Length: 79
Image (cartoon, rainbow, N blue to C red):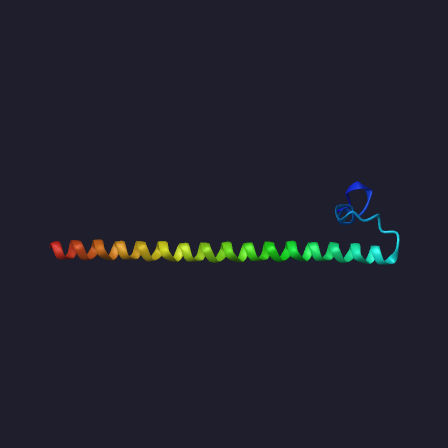
């Protein structure tokens, strides 16, 4: 965050280094907003990945159970 010897976001936005209370406040708010957005995105991605993994595991279990039941029924009918 503190690249170029100061506020990275102010540098990106083309502002001067925070010299007044207003620009300092703006800088802090932008830093907080950026961190919040990053945290929210990471949490959403983690939740989506966990849900997808759970769904895939359930599907695999269902497929395995169905295959086992079909094989067992098939062998039982053959006898």
